[in-house]
Length: 64
Image (cartoon, rainbow, N blue to C red; front, side):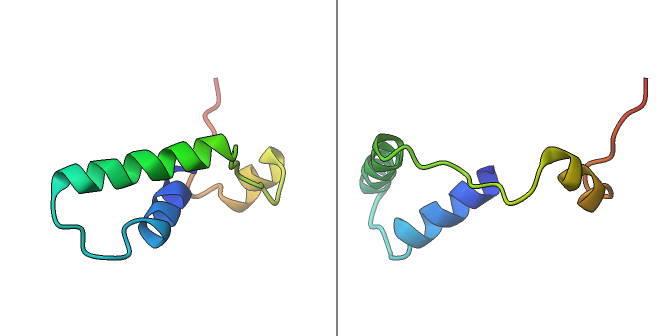
């Protein structure tokens, strides 16, 4: 989920040269506020059980 949000941030907010850290912080603050106000969420395309099967090499399960 974090990787997806960072990708959106890069495409929507950081796709240009930003002259200094202060402007960068302001841009990110405004972008984040807009995302939160619009209640943007992840639209998962498969269930957790399906993800565990499909992504088993990446996210192994631990047996007790």
